[in-house]
Length: 122
Image 1: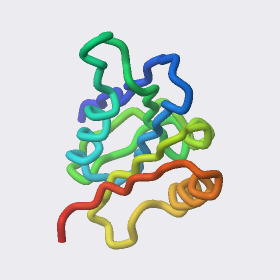
Image 2: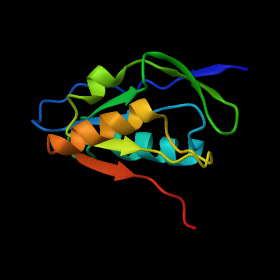
Image 3: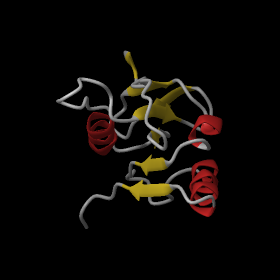
Image 4: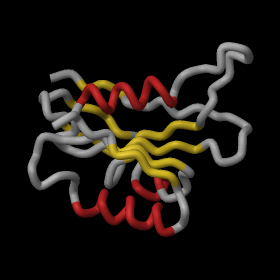
């Protein structure tokens, strides 16, 4: 199985533009990829990143998507703690995301960060 580096970190100079896309075992690859694409897009006028995007896991390392693809995750939850927006891709596991991820979302919400849970239609 080949690992794909999920590092879409980019530097921007806009305040409040840091986005953390959370990655964990079992995540839905499509929704994860869409979040990376949407937030990692360049501004068509300036050709500069609109957001500073970080893919974060419970710790740097590797996670396996629900389809079995291995993703290399460059950042831990400490990086997510500094984000103004947190994106949480869904998973097929009925237990949901790991408790460490859920705690990070609760902490982000408590400090006023925006959060987005990408959920598939029922």
